[in-house]
Length: 332
Image (cartoon, rainbow, N blue to C red; front, side, top):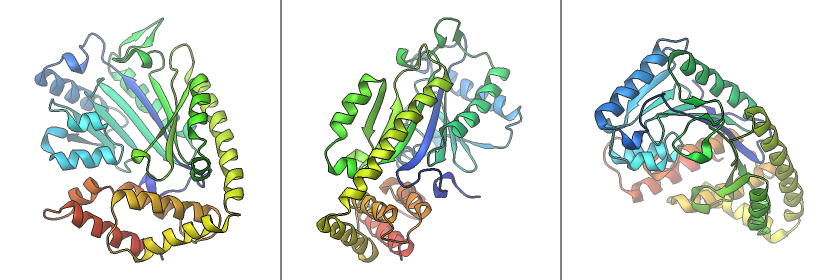
């Protein structure tokens, strides 16, 4: 089965992925921070049973985090299936993961249920439809905490209302090269959106998301985010054309691809910086590398992901060598 991250979606030259997150809680049940491990486990089993007794039966695997090593949990966080906070928590929690890995449902993190749906490229509305289907199953089979005035009740007051966070992952090397991110962030903040760097700021990858969930419908929130996203995409494309007129920058891109093709050892930071430049070169028709291959590499080549998927014990140094080999095999 193809995974969501080796697919190509709309506007893939700038947009890597779209994500919808819906937060829900069970009625008359304490938030996870107030629950014992026994109650947490009981709630997780109850939610999984509700899924298994629905039309979604068999679509998800249940992963109990207390059965995993620390490195395995960090690998799940690297891939966006659980939060960094959940990877560190010692109390009981679980994950429901779909077969194609496009849907992950955290159970008993900050809230009882956090549904996340990922799609390649710009595809927020399709992601929302999938998340809404899962949400409807839960609402039909369980009593979900809801208030007529406040909407869905959540542990974080900022998520009251729809309980929805919509986001797109953007590749903005030209906007980043012009040092325009700070001013863009300020402008978006005034409009109720945020833009934050991913991967610790390596590679000019950013997440654009809505910050307002109260007093607005899901449809309006999606329409507003898509409109803002389209403006940023247009600006990035315009700046890319200007940027590629500089011979020194074009040389920088070709050097990065040369290194990726030849390196025998490459750490995460170097990889993200160089794959970002390679991806820009692909968008500008300088290289014949598919967005699917690049998405696959970004998703799979985190250090914890490499170590956890290997047979036997590996060091970070070993991971750097495996990463370089994987890249060489996938970039011709």
